[in-house]
Each structure stands twice: as C-alpha cells, then as structure tokens.
Length: 362
Image (cartoon, rainbow, N blue to C red):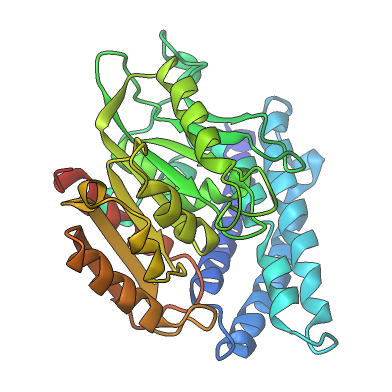
C-alpha cells in the first residue's frame, strides 16, 4: 500500500505540471500576436523550466512495473514538449521572432496525442479533454466496452504528417449505431495538417459527442485558387465515413481557420456541397466570390463568421464585408468579431460555435 501511495504521488507530480504547461501552450497560441510576443515568450520560458524540474519524477525506478506503459506515454509527452520549447532560444536571434515561438508551440498536438490514451484512466486527464462547462461528464474506458471499442477514439487514415490528402478522425467514446451523429469537418490553415488541427477541436467534439473529421489538403494548402482538387476529396472522405458510422446528414458543419476558412467559403457555397452549415474563422474573402455562387445555395444558408479585431494577416474589415455580402445574398449569418483575437484559432469559442450549429436549422 505504501508503495502504491508513493507511486500515486509520483504520477501526480508529473501529470499536474504537464497539464499546467499545456494550458500555457493553449493561452499562448490563443493570444499570440506582434504585441504579445515578449510576454508570451517569458511565460513559456518559465514553463520550460517547470517541466524540466518535473521531469525528474520520470525516473524508471520510481514507477511500479505494471505502470511502465503509462510512464512511456507521459515521458513521450515531456520529451516532445521540452524539445519543442528549445526553439525559444532562437528568440532575439531571428529576423522574425514570431517564428521561433510558433515552432515552440508546434508540438502541442503531439503532446495531446501522447496523453489522450490516458483520458479513460485518470480523472485529471479526462477533465483536461473536456470543455470547462461540462467537467462532470463521466469517464469511459474503451477497452471495457463490449461493442465498437476499436472504432471509437482518434484515428489517422492515410494521414501521417508527411502525407497529404488523408484525414484524421474522432468518433465519440459513447458512440452507438442507434444514434445519428452531427459531424464537424475542421480545415487547417495554410501549410497545416489535419493530424495536428484535429486537436484544436477534440475537446469540444468529445464533450458534445460529435464525429470530428480533420482532413489534410491535397496540396500545400487548400485549393482557394486554380483547379479544385480538395472538394472532391472532402466528399470522398465523407462517403467513407458514412460507411462506418451513423451520421446525421442534416447537421454537417464545414469550418476552417485562415486558408481553411477561405476554402470553407469556396467549397461550402457550391451547389453540390453536402455541408449544411459553414463556419469560417480568420478567413480571407472578396465580394467577387458571391457572384460565383447560386442564389439557391445561399438562401438561408447558416454561416457563422468569426474574426479577430487584432488580425494582422486578414484585417477585420474583410470579415465585415463578408457579413454584409452574405446577408445581402440571403444567407443566415451569425457574425462574431472578437476584440482580443489576432490571427489565431480561438479554441475557447468552440462551445459557442457548436451551440449555434446544433440549434440553427439548415
């Protein structure tokens, strides 16, 4: 018993600092911009030292033999996080100090992926992967469930980080064939990847029991100009998902960040688009796009536009123009202008977006 209590202390002493560090990663990603670089870099350097100190509790001798698989996952999370934070040493030596900070934040999704398998075992990690408003949701241990256990959770289909055109998928732990599930297609930004972007939505999809799909563009970014090779791929992916899970065809959300948001307009407003709701974030837009869209498709089409007042890449007047243009064309537009948002994805606003999605009739 004493050994088990000692092990519980060791476990707590490595998991708590890691989760605290991940919250710093999240805040940094949410608020990063030219005006916040210095304070964010300082907080991340403090986090790096805290994680270095806590990593001393990963000594193999301190862990029960049967807990070695857990130690391996937590050790991998620490390794990835600390290696990523080494990029902060380049700040002040670079022509663009935002790039080392972006690189330092880039490993966040890989840390999530290492920890996520433990969400069914430990309450701390389970709650970490839930939205704050629904922290009382019970844990489900997939290996103890008799049906479809291998289907549920996170999967990457032809979507290694070096692959293009594949997709990452989350199926709720509570999945049942007897229920039709709403689906969110979440599109990454330019030069991004679906296996990474999935984690910006995982918490809300898990909380609200949504099927989540995070595709990777066929090319280096989405086909916002030139031949469209991505829309057929999205439809292929949707068809393949229909073969394995029961989805609700009246609740299909297409959303995206930056280039992914722009492509949400480009692809989601076509007559043959299967998506019932659109939600571009921090997207570019030109009124000429409206001229290429049919009035029938736009009439009453639910569109949620999210944009930051501090966006330094696509200024907020672009989103204001989009709101006016789509409203004038007959779409049902919900506009969210976020005062403290730069050109980053606001994961904290996902719950409100899902509320709109599930309550807005298509």
